[in-house]
Length: 114
Picture 1: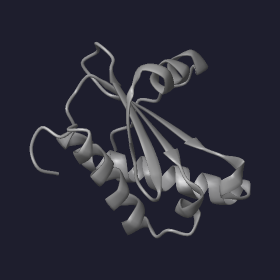
Picture 2 (picture 1 turned 30 degrees about the horizontal axis):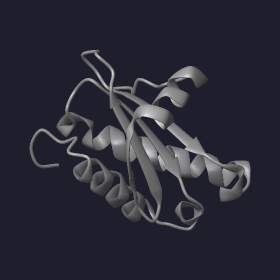
Picture 3 (picture 1 turned 60 degrees about the horizontal axis):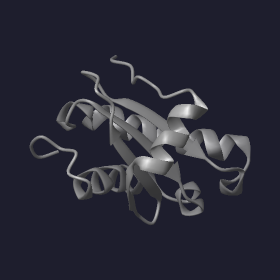
Picture 4 (picture 1 turned 120 degrees about the vertical axis):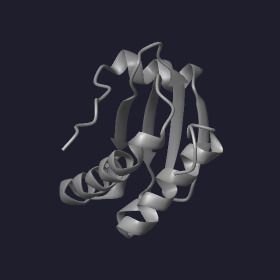
């Protein structure tokens, strides 16, 4: 199983929030910016407003899996941050996956069709 490379430092998160392009959906917000590397890096933020730790981790796992399954179609060289909204806690995996794909399409992050 191929792992997803993560964004970890708060400096990188702040840079994307400030200078990146964004797109909004009912379940998440996507921030993106070119990173000058040959691969994508993924960051996921889930606020305490979403729910207890179990719900936050569930939402995080769903977003990461939805990205992992469609990562081959993404353009390379981007940093991505998905910020989960409160509605994502009650959403099904199918709905979260659709949000991940829709946000990426809206920001023109696909090389072909997902």
